[in-house]
Length: 275
Image (cartoon, rainbow, N blue to C red; front, side, top):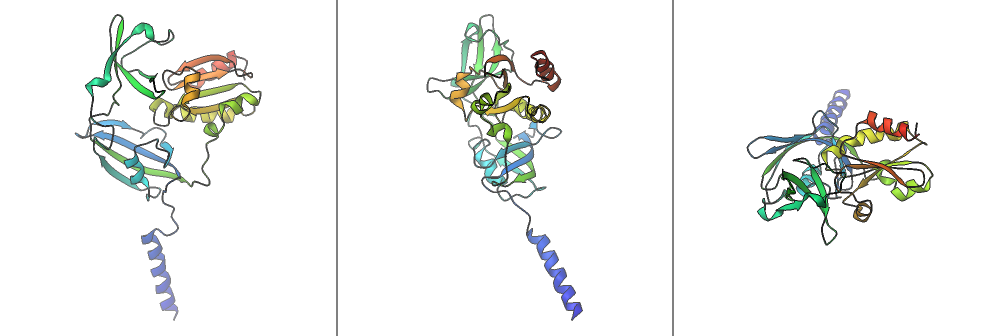
């Protein structure tokens, strides 16, 4: 009898392993972290998170390609997958009519244009688009509004490294609004960015560390520009990421564009009397 019980127990044990019973899989509404590599159709590596922080986003919020979201649903932590996404499923064909000239004088004076720099532009319908400087002339800039990956089939190699269920996931840097920050009487550093922007992703762990180290001394807020377009326009955000330091009354003191190293931020805070 004992022999049969042992055999039944072993059978149940291996059944649980094979079916993955009790192991959470990603579903719509979950916040996930994944490492990824993006390769072009010829195998050229375009971008990777390996060696940096994994990409974090909530499934269903439309912050990554819908095809990628669909592929992640059902994956478990530690699982890897390779996905081929066609041009029409990714960023569409490359369009020559989306390349245009811009007078240098139309840029804000504080922007020093460089080839490859990405800027935000607000269209007449209040839609925000990202443009890339591809040529600099004496008085004009040649701008490209195509996505850098437009016209390419893409291969995504992904590994799911963490899942936070819809009921337990939170991000205090995003959940705290700028209005709430201004109301609590503390100075504030606010970053206007996007979860899909590379330097924004590099900034996130820096901001998270500052939020812990300056608790009760400084508000640290991340503003998703595509979700808060009116606020983005109100503060004249041209390129992302842009960090703005406000005093305790909500008045802008200084701003910075691009990746801002932690030591440089701390030096700026000290200069402003925030220690």
